Image (cartoon, rainbow, N blue to C red; front, side):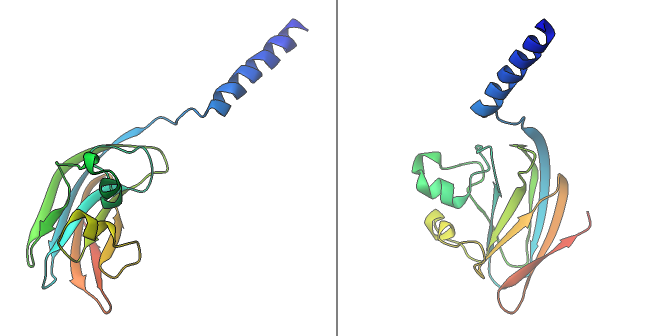
Length: 153
């Protein structure tokens, strides 16, 4: 009987921890991105995530525009001129298991608020899911808008 009481107590303690909402452990992942711009105008790229945890260096334009104090100096958006290739070098972040790294490509340049105003599905914005390690893309015109082809590393 004492074993049963102990087991029930243990289950209640574990349930209490689960109810409190313990965060899952974050994975550390590293990315390297190379993007070639074959458009007739510059593109601007941002690194962000599609989930938690929020992290310096990975805030979206919307997050930075909502909180001007959070402006993210290391990578607030990198323009890539027409005919040029940009390379990020290694970028490290913390990711919950179901969170992906995203490369946002905007077919425009401008102020942070201009990027934040372009929502998912806009013809001037692409959201590219990144895989850990090297990711290579080529941006080309399409009708309508533009597309990015993933190249083999």
